[in-house]
Length: 178
Image 1 (tube, helix red, strand yellow):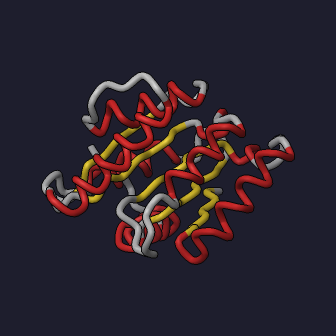
Image 2 (cartoon, rainbow, N blue to C red):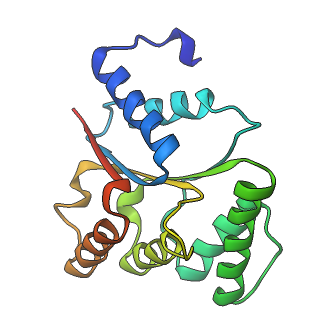
Protein backbone atom coordinates (compact mmCIF):
# COMPACT_ATOMS: atom_id res chain seq x y z
CA UNK A 1 0.00 0.00 0.00
CA UNK A 2 1.03 3.62 -0.59
CA UNK A 3 1.19 4.36 3.14
CA UNK A 4 4.02 1.81 3.51
CA UNK A 5 6.26 3.56 0.96
CA UNK A 6 9.26 5.60 1.95
CA UNK A 7 8.53 9.14 0.83
CA UNK A 8 11.89 10.59 -0.18
CA UNK A 9 12.14 14.31 -0.89
CA UNK A 10 12.09 13.52 -4.64
CA UNK A 11 8.95 11.41 -4.26
CA UNK A 12 7.26 14.18 -2.26
CA UNK A 13 8.23 16.73 -4.94
CA UNK A 14 6.70 14.52 -7.63
CA UNK A 15 3.47 14.13 -5.64
CA UNK A 16 3.44 17.89 -5.09
CA UNK A 17 3.58 18.50 -8.85
CA UNK A 18 0.78 16.00 -9.39
CA UNK A 19 -1.25 17.81 -6.70
CA UNK A 20 -0.70 21.08 -8.57
CA UNK A 21 -1.87 19.50 -11.83
CA UNK A 22 -4.90 18.09 -10.06
CA UNK A 23 -6.08 21.68 -9.62
CA UNK A 24 -4.68 23.19 -12.85
CA UNK A 25 -5.78 20.30 -15.08
CA UNK A 26 -4.48 19.93 -18.63
CA UNK A 27 -1.52 17.70 -19.54
CA UNK A 28 1.34 16.33 -17.45
CA UNK A 29 4.26 14.36 -18.82
CA UNK A 30 6.16 12.09 -16.42
CA UNK A 31 9.37 10.54 -17.73
CA UNK A 32 12.13 8.46 -16.21
CA UNK A 33 14.28 5.40 -16.73
CA UNK A 34 12.87 1.94 -16.09
CA UNK A 35 12.63 1.16 -12.39
CA UNK A 36 12.82 4.72 -11.00
CA UNK A 37 9.27 4.66 -9.62
CA UNK A 38 6.98 6.16 -12.24
CA UNK A 39 4.33 3.45 -11.76
CA UNK A 40 4.69 3.64 -7.97
CA UNK A 41 4.19 7.39 -8.15
CA UNK A 42 1.10 7.02 -10.33
CA UNK A 43 -0.31 4.35 -7.98
CA UNK A 44 0.26 6.59 -4.94
CA UNK A 45 -1.36 9.52 -6.75
CA UNK A 46 -4.36 7.38 -7.79
CA UNK A 47 -4.82 6.21 -4.19
CA UNK A 48 -4.79 9.82 -2.97
CA UNK A 49 -7.71 10.80 -5.22
CA UNK A 50 -11.12 10.77 -3.58
CA UNK A 51 -13.55 8.70 -5.64
CA UNK A 52 -16.30 11.25 -5.06
CA UNK A 53 -14.20 14.01 -6.69
CA UNK A 54 -12.21 12.18 -9.40
CA UNK A 55 -12.91 9.68 -12.16
CA UNK A 56 -9.60 7.91 -12.77
CA UNK A 57 -9.07 6.18 -16.12
CA UNK A 58 -5.87 4.12 -16.38
CA UNK A 59 -4.87 3.09 -19.92
CA UNK A 60 -1.83 0.81 -20.12
CA UNK A 61 -2.43 -0.27 -23.74
CA UNK A 62 -1.00 2.52 -25.90
CA UNK A 63 -0.09 0.58 -29.07
CA UNK A 64 -3.49 1.06 -30.70
CA UNK A 65 -4.85 2.83 -33.76
CA UNK A 66 -6.91 6.06 -33.62
CA UNK A 67 -10.32 4.43 -33.34
CA UNK A 68 -9.12 1.98 -30.65
CA UNK A 69 -7.51 4.94 -28.84
CA UNK A 70 -10.90 6.68 -28.71
CA UNK A 71 -12.78 3.46 -27.88
CA UNK A 72 -10.57 2.83 -24.85
CA UNK A 73 -11.12 6.31 -23.44
CA UNK A 74 -14.83 6.30 -24.23
CA UNK A 75 -15.38 2.87 -22.70
CA UNK A 76 -13.49 3.71 -19.50
CA UNK A 77 -15.46 6.95 -19.12
CA UNK A 78 -18.69 4.97 -19.48
CA UNK A 79 -19.69 6.45 -22.83
CA UNK A 80 -22.15 4.81 -25.18
CA UNK A 81 -20.71 2.28 -27.61
CA UNK A 82 -19.86 3.98 -30.91
CA UNK A 83 -18.25 2.80 -34.15
CA UNK A 84 -17.10 5.95 -35.92
CA UNK A 85 -14.25 8.16 -34.72
CA UNK A 86 -16.32 11.36 -34.86
CA UNK A 87 -19.06 9.76 -32.72
CA UNK A 88 -16.48 8.47 -30.24
CA UNK A 89 -14.97 11.95 -29.99
CA UNK A 90 -18.40 13.48 -29.29
CA UNK A 91 -19.14 10.80 -26.71
CA UNK A 92 -15.83 11.47 -24.92
CA UNK A 93 -16.57 15.21 -24.93
CA UNK A 94 -20.03 14.56 -23.53
CA UNK A 95 -18.70 12.25 -20.79
CA UNK A 96 -15.90 14.63 -19.74
CA UNK A 97 -18.34 17.53 -19.50
CA UNK A 98 -20.85 15.32 -17.66
CA UNK A 99 -18.25 14.26 -15.08
CA UNK A 100 -17.04 17.81 -14.60
CA UNK A 101 -20.31 19.78 -14.60
CA UNK A 102 -22.96 17.31 -13.43
CA UNK A 103 -21.17 14.70 -11.34
CA UNK A 104 -18.60 17.18 -9.98
CA UNK A 105 -15.80 14.70 -10.69
CA UNK A 106 -12.60 15.60 -12.51
CA UNK A 107 -11.64 12.97 -15.08
CA UNK A 108 -7.98 11.95 -14.69
CA UNK A 109 -6.85 9.97 -17.73
CA UNK A 110 -3.50 8.21 -17.35
CA UNK A 111 -1.61 6.76 -20.31
CA UNK A 112 1.06 4.37 -19.07
CA UNK A 113 3.89 3.44 -21.46
CA UNK A 114 3.13 6.63 -23.40
CA UNK A 115 6.38 6.20 -25.34
CA UNK A 116 4.41 3.78 -27.53
CA UNK A 117 1.74 6.31 -28.50
CA UNK A 118 2.02 6.92 -32.23
CA UNK A 119 1.94 10.36 -33.84
CA UNK A 120 -1.72 9.96 -34.86
CA UNK A 121 -2.77 9.34 -31.27
CA UNK A 122 -0.66 12.21 -29.98
CA UNK A 123 -2.47 14.46 -32.44
CA UNK A 124 -5.83 13.08 -31.27
CA UNK A 125 -4.79 13.84 -27.69
CA UNK A 126 -4.13 17.40 -28.85
CA UNK A 127 -7.71 17.58 -30.15
CA UNK A 128 -9.12 16.16 -26.91
CA UNK A 129 -7.21 18.77 -24.91
CA UNK A 130 -8.71 21.64 -26.85
CA UNK A 131 -12.33 20.70 -27.48
CA UNK A 132 -13.81 23.27 -25.09
CA UNK A 133 -14.49 26.78 -26.32
CA UNK A 134 -13.46 28.58 -23.16
CA UNK A 135 -10.04 28.33 -21.57
CA UNK A 136 -11.09 26.18 -18.61
CA UNK A 137 -9.94 22.58 -18.55
CA UNK A 138 -12.35 19.88 -17.43
CA UNK A 139 -9.85 17.07 -16.99
CA UNK A 140 -6.24 16.04 -16.46
CA UNK A 141 -4.21 13.85 -18.82
CA UNK A 142 -1.06 12.17 -17.52
CA UNK A 143 1.44 10.63 -19.94
CA UNK A 144 3.82 8.29 -18.14
CA UNK A 145 6.80 7.32 -20.28
CA UNK A 146 10.33 6.04 -20.36
CA UNK A 147 12.69 8.96 -20.76
CA UNK A 148 13.74 7.97 -24.26
CA UNK A 149 10.38 9.06 -25.65
CA UNK A 150 11.96 12.31 -26.83
CA UNK A 151 15.23 10.76 -27.95
CA UNK A 152 13.72 8.36 -30.48
CA UNK A 153 10.50 10.21 -31.25
CA UNK A 154 9.62 10.79 -34.89
CA UNK A 155 9.77 14.35 -36.13
CA UNK A 156 6.02 14.36 -36.79
CA UNK A 157 5.36 13.44 -33.16
CA UNK A 158 7.72 16.16 -31.93
CA UNK A 159 5.71 18.73 -33.90
CA UNK A 160 2.52 17.48 -32.26
CA UNK A 161 4.07 17.68 -28.79
CA UNK A 162 5.31 21.20 -29.48
CA UNK A 163 1.85 22.11 -30.70
CA UNK A 164 0.28 20.67 -27.54
CA UNK A 165 2.72 22.69 -25.45
CA UNK A 166 1.82 25.94 -27.25
CA UNK A 167 -1.92 25.37 -27.07
CA UNK A 168 -2.20 24.68 -23.35
CA UNK A 169 0.54 27.07 -22.23
CA UNK A 170 1.20 26.81 -18.48
CA UNK A 171 -1.02 23.75 -18.09
CA UNK A 172 1.76 21.53 -19.42
CA UNK A 173 3.82 20.22 -16.53
CA UNK A 174 6.77 17.98 -17.24
CA UNK A 175 8.51 15.87 -14.66
CA UNK A 176 11.59 13.71 -15.10
CA UNK A 177 12.33 11.20 -12.34
CA UNK A 178 15.97 10.30 -11.74
